Amino acid sequence: MNRDEALELLKEYNKEPFHIEHGVTVGHVLRWYAEKLGYGDEADFWETVGILHDLDFELWPEQHCLKEQELMAERGLDPRLIRACASHGYGVSSPDLPQPEHEMEKVLFAADELTGLIGAAALMRPSKSCADMELKSLKKKYKDKRFAAGCSREIIARGAENLGWELDRLLEDTLEAMKAWAE
Figure (cartoon, rainbow, N blue to C red):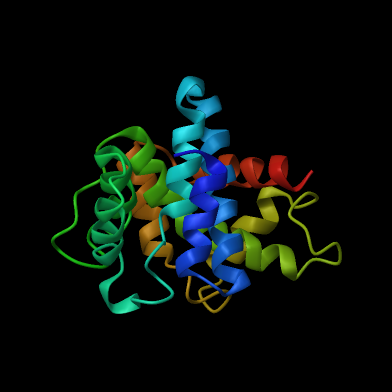
């Protein structure tokens, strides 16, 4: 499945512009990480996973990460794609989801919530963009639990830990990934 096909599939089950934009954003972030972490030959796959990771969220939020496996399997999609998308809900959506194992799955788990926090912080800026955001500003927003309260700091921190990274590295790299896309 290529990027355009993934986007069409996402739009089949998601009509809200926010959900579509989130999928595209996470797709771009995962593509950036694929290149940075030495998986450039898999960048298209990583991006597709990012686009489709919340395929079921708009229509089946109570079955998030479970229903999407069924939808993807019915279409005969790559089992690696199905597993990767489902793994981002490990320990969050359902106890029956696979634990992130591959580095890409761990990055998805860690960066998914963080992209929302960065996006919210960008909207507060005069530029309405993360392109001119500094790490110091992001860290301040991260520490303020009332800001973008729906973005779980616990999941972000656990994601960094699962990757074996300091939280600052995850924050800085994900911000850089979003800046690259914003430019």
